[in-house]
Length: 243
Image 1: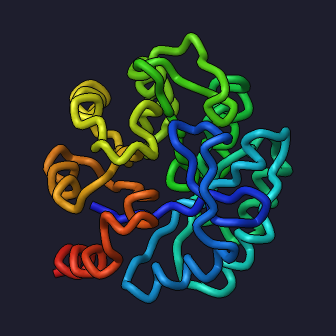
Image 2: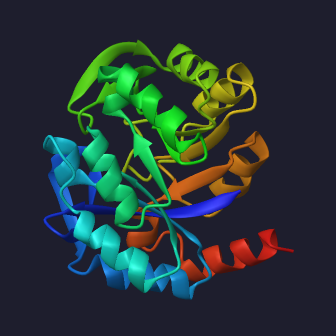
């Protein structure tokens, strides 16, 4: 199972929110590049980079930070937050994103998102399926849609999607453990999907449980920043995976 630390950006700074609420913002570092370099120094290969300013506005905002991290580390970056047009996508890939995550766009403009899957390939496009009570949430989680989570994933699977990041919003940033039951349900019903678990990771012991469920990756945010899971522990986990 891949370990994917998260860096969320507001106004160029590394922050975390609770349950996606912008009013709960905590700034952890003024310099996201510094944070990314510390991940890389501990043997981590992947990064989930989220442009929270972009998620709220109608276009990509923090692409310069993406470019900085992409050019000054070897991390494979998946980038999300506010990708709403072909030009946003072009900027993201030109700035060094390895993959992009589309959430709101997959709900609000299916035609465009499906075009991206066809154009860039399903190894480059991740479906962001973030859920509140098993309903898909959009616009930086500021609104719920009427989409039921599992049929939504299955529908995109039929369109070629391989990777899905699923965050249970009720768990996000709460450090109370991830949604094991929800992930088990998704993996049972959307067979063969590469599921990346996100939200609520709070202790190192949860990682083997997610791996046993069959998650392809897990995104870890606040647990790292709050010192609940150390980079040393993650380094050893990654090393053990590579043997």
